[in-house]
Image (cartoon, rainbow, N blue to C red; front, side, top):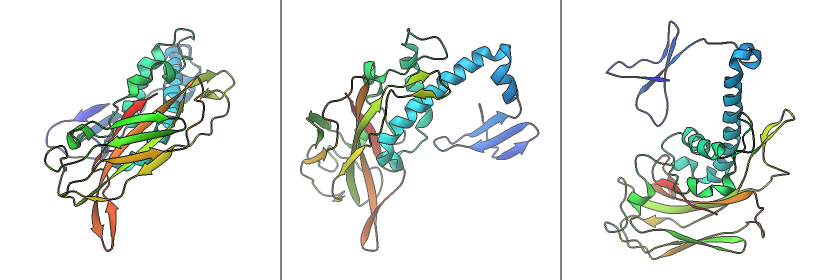
Length: 262
């Protein structure tokens, strides 16, 4: 993948090149058309390493999809495509698997969960630049309790723009480790995985007024966390505008962050 520099703005095709834009980048992306056929990549001996890399990429993609499922309530806050960076974060985790061959290495997040802690959904404004006081959480049986401190505009709360309202959204869920299955199913969690993320959110607050401490409570976690699973905890702050008689959140404004991996 290449990026077009300078003042030339072009999208579409030109000879064997494709030009297009990608959210999260202000550059024009350039790709060359063509390459080996799918049949060659699938069967030719000289593409063995490519098949191994593609297989492991598919494993990381499966794990990334499970992470994004938990982050889904905050996805409207993201100002770039988080899929690639999440996949990249999982690559060193996959390389830590020394029990399986290259091309079939597992993604054991549960043994390396802290590598995902602090992951940000934003590049323009990050949560720590808006909230200048740490947000803390605690696990209590089958729930997560998130404590948001007292906020004073201009001191420990900085609004990224001219918005009148804000609210907090918290999400938590189970992330399974992902393993290669030699039965044409590719990469999958062990057993049946049917956990859904749980969400809590605050009321809307005016951005120009002092706000007391706020507590968000997320219920629905399993009573006993399976050994090869992790709990992902994330929080976001959304900004809104009044439209008629209702406050509507503004997309791609605000911030979201993974604040805990257990």
